[in-house]
Structure formats: C-alpha cells, structure tokens
Amino acid sequence: MKKSLLAISAATALFTSSAVAADYNFEFTPVIGGVMPEKNLDIDDHGLVGFRIGKNLQNSYFSQIEVGFDVAPRVKVDYTSGKKVDIYRGLIHLVKDIPLSKSFSFYGLVGAGAEALSDNWRDNNDRMFIDYGLGVKYKFTDRLALKAELTHEVKLNADEDHYTNNIGLFTLGLSYTFGETAQAPVEKVVVVEEKPVVEEVVVVAGDDDGDGVANNMDECPNTPAGVPVDAKGCPQTISLHVNFNFNKANVLPKYDAQISKVADFMVKYPVYNVMLEGYTDSTGPEAYNLKLSDKRAASVAKELKKKGVEEKKISTVGYGESNPVASNKTREGRAQNRRVDAVFSY
Image (cartoon, rainbow, N blue to C red; front, side):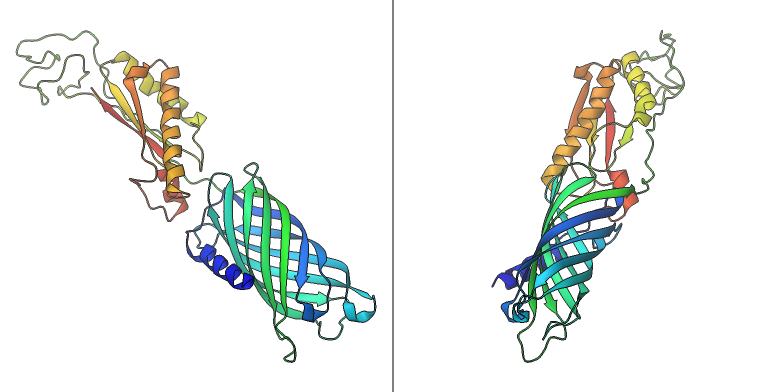
C-alpha cells in the first residue's frame, strides 16, 4: 500500500504543474540517508552517504536533471556469517518542482541507475534499477536549502525464483545553488515629456479654455485649468513602466533617474494624480502573486514620495498574474510581465 501511495503521489507531482524557472544554473547537494531492502535480499538496513549535482532547466516541463552517487560502506549480509560488503550506486533523475510558497516547495522525481557490490553474494549482483520518489525543499536563502527525499528503487533482471527486489531509500541533504542565469532583457522606464510649457499662461484672444492656445489652433478644447498643454492645446502626458527581478519587489537602482523625472513632473504640475498598477508573472500560487504585485506597486509609490510627490496624489493596486503583456511560457515573457505600470489622471 505504501509503495502504491508513493507512486500515485510522485505521478501527481510530475504531471500537475508547469516547470519553475530558476535564477541559477546548477545545484550541488551532499546527502546522508538510510536504505531499507526487502527481507528476501538478506541485506540488513544500512546507511549511505553521497552527493547530487543538478542542472536547472529553463523553458522545460521538468525543473531539473540531476546525477548522483551513493556509497554504503561495510554493509552486513545475513547469509555470510558476519561478512560485510560495500555497495555503490550511480543514478540520474528528472525532477519536477512545485513551489508552495516563497521558501517551501514540493517535488517529484523519476529516473534510473546502476548498483554494484564490492563482492557479489548469492542473488545480490551488480544490476540496473529504476526509481521514483518525492521530496520537500525549504530555502533558507536564495542559494541555500534543506532537502528531504523518499525514493522507491526497483532492481531490474532480478532472479525469477525470488520476489521483485524492492528497496526504499530516504535522504537528507543541504543544497547550494550557483551559476547565475543570464537575466532577461528588461524594459527600461519610459518617460516621455513634450516641449516645456511656459509656466505663465498667456491668454490670447479666442482662447476659451485659457490654455494659451487660440481656439482655431486648439485640438483639445475645454482643457481643465492647470493642465500643461502642447502647441496643439492637448494635455502633455508622461509614462512610467518598471520591471522587477524574479520573486522580488525592490525597485532596481537603474530606474532612479526615470522615477525622478516623473516625480519632478508631478511636483511641477500638481493637478496630476497617479495610479500604480502592480503585476507578476504566472510562476507560483495565485494568492502569493497577488500580494507580491501589491508590494511592487507600494515600492514604486515609496520612491515617488521620497522624491517629493504628495502621498494623496498616489494610489496603488495589485493585479497579480492577470493582464500579461507577454507570454508566460518563455523566460523573456515572464520578465516583461513582472512590472508596475503607471496611469496618470487629472
């Protein structure tokens, strides 16, 4: 029953969620653990030590491909009158990660490998195997995480006179990720400001809305007082668009100059108000993304207030992963969707 439940759970992990893009290319995990062979193998329960090296996959259904090596030294075999053997195991896995929160994730794996004994006894010979399993991962930092894993190994080409050679393994490891991935091109803040407006509006004959542009030249009549206009009498506009790194809400220093221009514009023309709309890509739970989008909008609002814009002039809202401007199936598209857009009004 336990083996069936593990198989069902592993299948669920592998086929229910899209792969998660990683900020790093590789993961190294030293592990310790235990091995529980079926009793017909006449091998005692024993410990193991080993390591895993994983390559994080981008734009793939699976999150990672990993290779590993384990060694179980001095394992007692019941039928050898106390004699002990060393067991070596090499393996390769495809891993599917499902994030449950910013720090905690669940994963499934499938794979194959080979097992060798320092001295073959009775029915325990060097053999190939297939395996599958489940694991949980808790991130202490962006690079360092604790991993706990349970796998079921089935030996191939077992002796037909014996039961299937099943082995249960459990491991605990401390993983370290390294090799940062290339950052996707990030759209710069676009701030458009038309020709400078004369602060003192000169009222001319035939200027009904008092914006300094004669009626016969005014393409935007009835412009509210105090709104800066261009040569055609239409309101001058400005725009703000800020992108964010994966799972981050802090405003990058590269946007400081552009945000300053927007702040100066709003201070100069206090008639304007701004609504900051936060968004995320589709990675992770929807409820978590909604909160993250709120934080991103609040971060941009904080920068505007620091630069002199009155708090009452700024509103924020988070829309989570809705309204994507690009496909969430590519790394570049997800980078464009992690953004804050500004909507100005008067």
